[in-house]
Image (cartoon, rainbow, N blue to C red):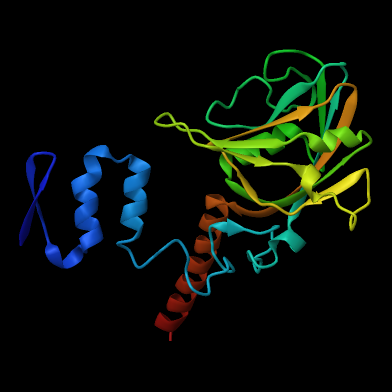
Length: 256
């Protein structure tokens, strides 16, 4: 057993499980953030965030467009689509929250019919298809979802310049924002001035805040393509079904 010194105190550890990088990380831990230490720890594991050959197919906890044989490989082609239409009846720009983050009742959260924007100003209205925005909001709150991409259509070409600002929320730290700008997906190869397809994935869940501006006197439709959702309820049903099959097989064997 080796011994090391960390922050003025003696720390015992098994040398067989730690490499030089890990020892150095312990020595520097008093001036590293938790995120830095997580990155160091990742180097100690033979699991680096990916599993060779894993596609999600057959995973009880994942739901792909309601299909039992879906996977991440074809999610963007078979994904569920939710169409969200936002209209701004004011001359001034309004900011809506497509995802509220940790505060579910945050001002600006999209809703069926009229709702206020993130600053409390009125003028926005929303509609959902094939179901209500209310059901959509509660689905996202309960089932973390990977959005594989989205289509955005509007008659106001300037609306394409409005970005999605995506930020993970935490009571312990402030995370960097991810910006998705639909306008960069417009090109000579895609001369359509009313519809743009954005093939960039992002997450919608109860830890993620997504804000989006709607220009004055404008309407925009956002077609979200759902890739995969984490669904514990589906997992329970799948496991119960397999258990019934096993019990039936065992009972049949014992009855011989």
